[in-house]
Structure formats: C-alpha cells, structure tokens
Length: 405
Image (cartoon, rainbow, N blue to C red; front, side, top):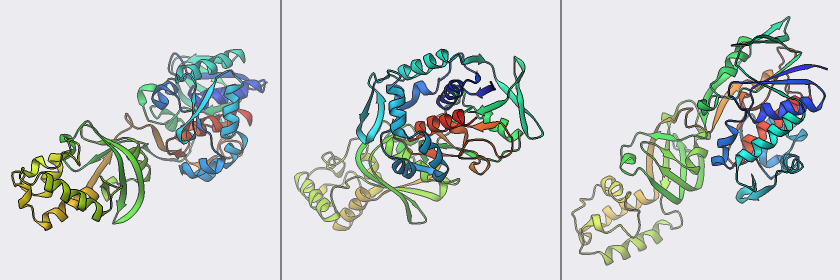
C-alpha cells in the first residue's frame, strides 16, 4: 500500500484522492480550508456546471491553451463517463442549453456532499494545513513540510492546489511556488474568463446596462481575433458578461494592443437600419435630437451615442444632415472601445498559465522532473472557454492522476 498525499481539496484533488483510494492506497488530502471544495461551491453561479455533454472533439475545440495535452485524460475519463460517474453516485443530473451539465437540484453543495461522502466511504483523510515545501531526494518524492504539522512522508504526491483565481477560496498561487521550488517551469499565470477595462470614460455613465443580442469583434491591428454574438454587461468601470469573458481568452499579455467593436443592431444591415432611423426621425422631426433615439437605444446608452456622434443634442431632428446621420449609423454598427487591461484574479473565473505541460507526462500526469510527483487541475497550463469545459479538465486530470499512481 502506497502513502499518497493530495495537495488541494478542489474538484481535481477530490477526484484524484477518490481514485487513488479506490486503488487501495492510503490517501490524505492537505487542504487550507476547514472543508474541501470551497471553489466548487461557487462554480456556475452556485449551480455547478459539471461538464459539457458533448464529445471529446468539442471539448478540444473549446480548450484555448494546450488542447493537445488533454487528449489522453479525456480518453480515460470523457464527459459521458463523468455524467454516469455522478449519476451512479445518486446525483441526478440534467443537460441544459449548450449541452451544459448541472445537478437537477441546481445546487453545487449537492455535488460537494456526494464527493465528501465518497471520500469518507473510501477512508480518505482530510488534514487542514498548508504545504510550505515538497521534499525530494535524487529527483524522487519524499514527503511534504507542513506549516503547522511538521514533516509528512509520502510515496506519491498529487499537486492539485489550483491557480490564482478567486484567491479567497484558497487558490492563491501557492501551488505554483511549490512546483517552481522543484525546478518546474511556470508559464506566467494570468486571469482567464474575466472582465475587461477600457480606455473610454463613458462606460461609467452606462454602468448597470445589459446589452442583449449584440455582435462583438475583438481586433488587434485591424485583424479580427474573435467574434461573437450574445450579451454583455457594463459594470462600474469595466465590461463583463458572456461575450466579454469569452473574448478575454483571446487576449495575450498586452490588452492595450486590442480594441472591441460592437454592433448594437446586428440584425439590421446599414440600409435597413438607415430606413429605420429615417422613420424615427420623421416621427420625431420637430423634437430635439436628444429625444429621438428612445425607440432604438436603452436610455443609459443614449447620452453616450449623442456625445460620440458630435451632433448637438439640442438640434432638432429635421436639421440633422445626411452626413451626420451616416456618422450616427456607424456608431450603431461600429461602436469602438480601446482596451486597457483585464480584471484581476479576484474577478477571474479561471487561471491561465501554470505548470508547463512540456514537463508533465499526459499519459500519467506525472512530472518528468520528479519521480512520484503528479499534477491535476487548474495548476496545469490548460484553460478552456465557459460551458463546463474547465471543470471537465479538473475532473479528468484528477481521475487520470489518481488512477496512474
């Protein structure tokens, strides 16, 4: 019987611990929090989007960073296997729009209860402490040094300490330090699936506004890097919402090189929108320009468009020239914002970067530098879009590591 220590009690760590224990190993989870799975509780806005009920090819398409690394893990524990894994543990699941998998109860706490029950059933010990150093000799694992509990020997260690997103849950980047101490290359950690700050001040005026059914294009040097259709939100000083957090995954280390272009009326081409605008102008011909846009725009956006159009807001509609109307149409179809930076780790859903996949055997999840050291979850330099793909990565790499000790 091997003695196995799992560092981190998140989704990857719990899955790794469970698989290692089922293989008759003596397993301990070292977790900073009193209870494991703190970050799991807030995933999917507290509903826990466990996975995406689609084939491996679809998951690979949605992995932005190092998708090829995940072929082996997804082959061993694919989304359909994950679905039936939890259903066999009496957790009833459902499939929603976009093939997203949720518990029927809509409660992430129910997922955690199932995992905790199985860990207890398989005699996995949970130790509330913090690993300050992983000890090795001749490139082989010896054990861990704990902050409060001294030295603990181990035959195998699975490092599943998470990334740096939502640090209040315990993902504070300590796992990267532990891996780096052993000589592993750490790809610079950055916020992923996060909000975006812009150079324009007008977004403060429009704080609280939700824009639905808009088209977004992310450009760098006039090249379209990403385009999407859907919803975005304007918060206090930054952009958020599904379109924005997806776009954030296509931005590299220098956000200031990028700009966003919004089409506020993507269902209408220029000519159709022009005809619509002419009808509205005819309707409000004797009113001030400021009072003529209520049928086309939400109220919070009207002063923004007026200001950027450079048309005097007290000008009557029947005085607006064809050239001014043309400029107004361009604002509707190409509202441009310059990016400044991404929101930080406190807001980010995931961490990009981490332990280089070049130093991890994808067939086993074992380090290529230190014998007996394995990795699982967000600590690895693999990241995906929203829709359950990131939790599938966590569970699949945990499953792989726990099974291949």
